[in-house]
Length: 188
Image (tube, rainbow, N blue to C red; front, top):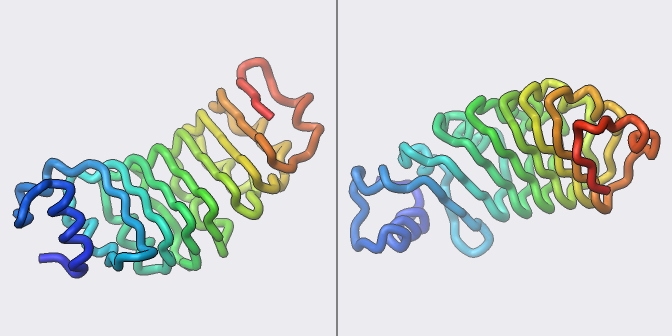
């Protein structure tokens, strides 16, 4: 049923069952997969029909993984932790509302710029972020950029729906401090 035996074993543990049946998968909305010790083939996540929240730890994200993530239609929250994203394909899943990157290498800065319905973007301990790539985010309400270099940071004011901005421990153009309006809660 599954490509990865580790995935099947994880589901058995989550469901507290000796065998996983297709109807059992309906109750799973959250998955956290750590590829450091175990091996997961992301093809298996497509078999979890009600998956809403997915955390991927220590994955190398190629085109294959990106294309699978794009096909998970119910996915609302996606987190990458300690991943290496080398995919030339872009993340385009329009259902994703919350997108997080933590200690993740992103080779192509355009990787996530087409997930246009994101309401909360959190990037922590990533080398750099080009704000110009985020201008497509019409629904973005919360932007959290910690421990990163923020390129073209003054473009943040062009994110019209933004109401929360956190730039703790990040490097950015200090002119931004004077450009932020009262409508945005700003933590630095």
